[in-house]
Length: 353
Ligand code: PLP
Ligand code: COI
Image 1 (cartoon, helix red, strand yellow):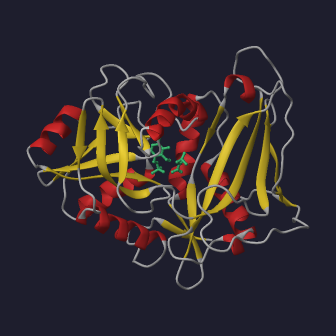
Image 2: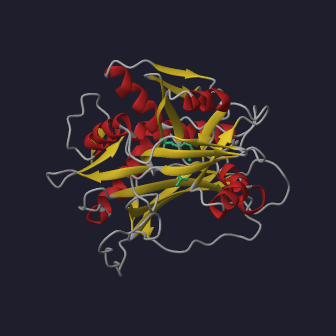
């Protein structure tokens, strides 16, 4: 399937950042855009200079938050090439988010082609420095000017690109995480499994309070009993207890992370059994008290593999370690090795651009 994309080159290309660009601060020269109109479908695929967009103040996304987004990366390989990591997974997850949010889906083949064409046009922006990559942010917003509450009839799908370094300013060092026992992120039947902006807006208050208390992120518990571990603000979580690896099951309120899925596959290939099940905070705390909690780490596109050094729940502190655990390090090396083309990709996860 070929997508007919009109290209308008940017007449004023920006200088590429020197050194570490941080996360999500710098954008490349171009963006992709395609519009949807009910009765017509997706139309006017185009690549245009990166810049402000025009929206009616009554655009429905601004009022009722009908939108969703994705996050994936393009990596520079040792031979100077560029590759994507499992983009078909992101395409499928965006389609699932669209279904949950009453939005029109984009066929995965077209979605991937749009990503590939944009990355190709801005290929010089894919960093060469170790540990850096080009973050790809596809998103869909409801653009129809209308104030009645219903699904919109007009949308825009856009893709922007941003050269990035580490998500956490502390790099690969263990993060301190605050276990949230007051606010909740998602409830059964809610939008927790969809990658929609509203989930993140709902989590900001808890994140701000956690950061004020000296913690980088929030660990969310289930929205009903606030007993079972769900996920972190921008990562899924894994615990190694007594040699077993446990991660919360995808029961409907957790984002089905692509890094999570990849780690489960790698760990299984290494002979580990990964238990996807309900895991209570109490079980983790008990394991820590008894010296059986060996490692904990988060997984995500932006955060990669992020060791967790400490969990702070209302009345208790769980120390896991000040150093990166051996399994977290091994997973990081394997996963990033495949992503950057430093290790063989035996599973067909990467795609050259
Ligand atoms: N959970 C949340 C809430 C996220 O925002 C992310 C980041 O995308 C993840 C988990 C990890 O998902 P993935 O590995 O697909 O990036
Ligand atoms: C990602 O890892 O791609 C994310 O979306 C996390 C965050 C920046 C929202």
